[in-house]
Every structure is written in C-alpha cells, then in structure tokens.
Image 1 (cartoon, one colour):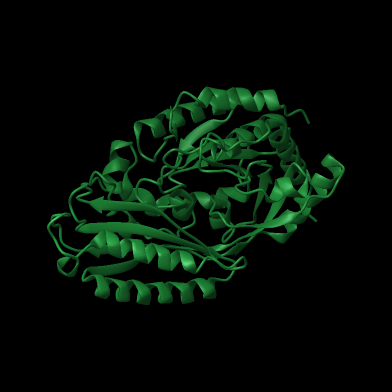
Image 2 (image 1 turned 30 degrees about the horizontal axis):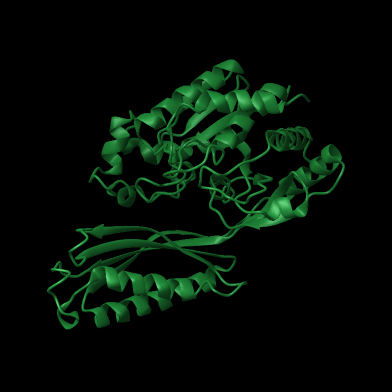
Length: 400
C-alpha cells in the first residue's frame, strides 16, 4: 500500500492559507475560516472520488459509492485560538490518503463540527450530535464573547439548528470509526516508536466559575472596602491548581478567564473563568468538583464577592474497542517490524464519543516536543504515513 509523506504534505499545504496568523491557527466553528475548511474538504473528497454530504449537525462526510455500512476515518478541522496545524487536520488528511489507497475498502472520511468547542465551550459538538448525546436545547443558547448564540452562528453558516436532533440517523452508516491524531504529550516519542494505540480516554470535567464584585478606584479604595472579583479569582485558581500537584493526581488547568472592566486603574467587578479537570477515575473528579465548589464559595465570602459555579461540560472516560485495538496492534507489529504500546489519552476526541455507540479506535502519531494546541506542535509526516498504512491494513483484515 503506497501512502507517502509527500502526499500528506500536499494535502495539508492546501489548507495552510486558512486561518494561520502570527499567533497560530484560528479556525473557530461556524466562521468564515470554517467555511474555507469546508471548501478544502470538498476539494480533497473530489480528488479521491468521494461525494460530500453535510449532516444536520454540520459534520462533513466524504462518502464512497458503495452501500453502507462503511468504515469512518477522520477527525476535525476547527482549532483552538492560536493552535497548531496538525491537531485535527492531520486525521482528516490521513482519512483521504487511506480512502485513496485502500482498494476494496469502503471508507467514509469525516470532519466533525466544532470538536474543540473554542468559541462556544461546546467540545465534541458534532460527534455528540451524531450519537444523540448533545443537550441541544442547552447548547443552542450558549453565546460567544460577542453575544452571538451558537444557533445564530449555525444559521449564518448554512446549518439549520432545528434539525440537529436528526443527526443520529446517520450513525448506522458506520460499522466503525478510527481517528489518527497527533500525540499531545511525549508518551509515544519516549517509547521510541512512530505510533501508539490508545487504550482509553480519561474522564474530563470543566467548571465555569463566575465571580461578581464591585468596580472601584484602584488607588482610593482601601482594602477593607473592596469587593475584588479578580483577587477572588486568583485564589480560586490557586486552590484548583493545588489539587493537581501530585504526580498521580488529576490534570488541572485554568486556561481561560474573562475580566470586566479589565482596566489598569479599576478594581475588577466581574470575572468568568473555566477550570478543566482530567483523571482516569471519574469518581475522583466528582470529589474534586465538590471540594472546589466549597473552596470557591468560601473564598468568595472572604473577598466579599458573589460566586456561581456551574458544570460546563462532563465526559466519562471511555475504553476503545478491544477487537479493533488488537487488529491495530497486529498491523503495527507487521508493518513496523516492532510492537507498539497502548496509552491512556488525557485529551478529548470525537473517537471517544463514538466509542460509546460503535466500535472505535485511535492511533497517536509521535510528537517529539509533546507540544499541542500551539503553533509549535509538530509531527513527522513519515510517521503519519506509517499510521495510515497501519489503519488501512487493520481495517482490511476480515473480522474473526
């Protein structure tokens, strides 16, 4: 099977003009950049003889001529703010390479809508819609920083939000799904192999903390008269971070915060921040949520501000299909001439959402720096081509 690094490079290069700035890749869902990604997807599908469909949730499908069910291969094309060029697009480009090279294997290439959730805090939007797991009514009311609801943004992008509930009707067309993705840490690189198989995804939870104080003059307001929302937020962040200090503990990150009025000489009156927790054990995350809510409430009381803590998103840990993993491990051993490891992945992925409904698997491609969600992320496309060959070989093997 001939899948080359050069061919992958050519596919990704055709996407490079979209949303790449000095600060990284900006391809948020339901934007002009998202529409340009769709045009790229359509060009790639045409180049390998696949027909393009857009399902009721905005997911893009490049479908073969054969009758379903098909194997689905893909990832996503949206990005975080200031992201890198491989997180998501690598898996979609690999899907097109496999579809072009795998003779006799009916492959549908899929790009899931709004996987990152960077604009509306709606991670894995498209795959959750496809599997019927999306809380549509709640999600459609979410707003971005400009006050635009996701329902409004979808309509502007040509997708009717009122039809999302019909998205699960497309799932029976898949007999299984496989996602190739850049490794987002150094686990694969440290193992000294080009790829690894994901055994499971860790559980994830995101809390939104809102703190309301009172704007006042930074110079004339004495400490005992302050209602400083930002000072309270800083203490909440430190409290959350302390839970992630242990080497075997949860991964805890506060990576986004909105401050009002955000002026150099004014005490902050309003802060929203998001705390992300990840762990192999969902029970530990639930305990951590309760502890942080209690701590945030106590901090708010001491700082004389009001606090609201809400669950923004929650995803159970998910084990991938054992039979499909076995086929991938065997194909990797035969193709690479050496065994490859299995790893638990602490990132969220569309494949993990689909794994609750159909056989699914993930292959990670070596990332020597371990950096991701950043312009510095990097993979060798020779390694990615190896991943393509392994996936195609595994899927072509008849099921026992």
